[in-house]
Length: 407
Image 1 (cartoon, rainbow, N blue to C red):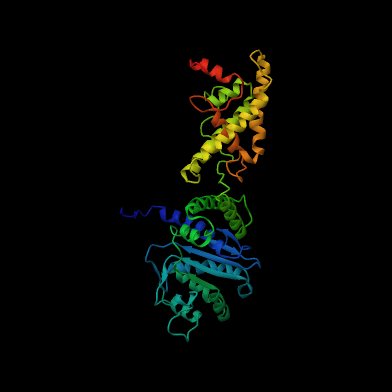
Image 2 (cartoon, rainbow, N blue to C red):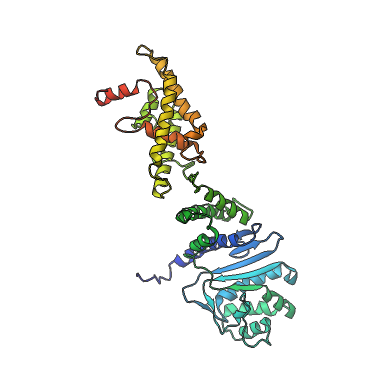
């Protein structure tokens, strides 16, 4: 295994901390009442506000494996400095604040910090209060940083000291950043089939990170609520049911420029052949791209059963053939070009505007996204060596002449 970098200028640990902050916030929201909201980088690393307005400030420490908190650990006392300022600002004992320290490390068995753990396993000397133990520890410090915190702490009354410390909870052994995805999948995704959980988590985290960025950049002022995470997770899980498929290419565009006038692909040539406008051709290119990429993603994630795409294309082809026969019924070898163009546009308009209304033309019953059907028609119109569907009544004849192939 490669040795971890020790470059003092490396920003890796700081960057890891920011990602940990977002991941742990999502995990906690999934475990708290749904009316709880979270704010990042407000009064502390995380601020949790419950339905009654109570606020919990959380400091997060992602530490090296085996790290331990001792009496004078700066991780704890730096958090205390933040909490003291907020405690005094909000009215001291009249405030509705609670304070949490989430750390991947563990509290040393010999430290008075044991008294802040959920199990309340304090030191053997139970005759001393937490305030007395804290004052005794602070009196031993030679650190200027902790010494400054001690001065602020000393200014509290005895009652305030005990009240302040009683609001603190240390949650040691918190999950590490790389363990959070599995924790979420194990605890909150049991209703989702195991083979789909990775995909659902990736999409959930993508949505979550977008919400976090909006909050941090100020485009979202309110907190992110637990029910939003629950609703998103529920919506994503529905897409992986047997009668549904996930839709992930809505609004996506190809990286290359769209050239409606010179695109050489057969399905585009077909549209130019019947005089479809440039804007409609552009939409067709987008539908083709989204359907092609979506179908490829479904295949990569093994979401399709064997032969499902082929069966779906056969259904589209059959329905197209039935409608084609109706539209072309009055045509003959002597039909004028303008009549042929009109018939071709009518057939294409059916595929572009109406076919999505037929449940029988959906790949699965609950996949209602229009680009799946529209784009699949374009994929059939682009098939090689000969398109399976066409719009202009004489397109196959002209294609054969173009390619020098006898039809």
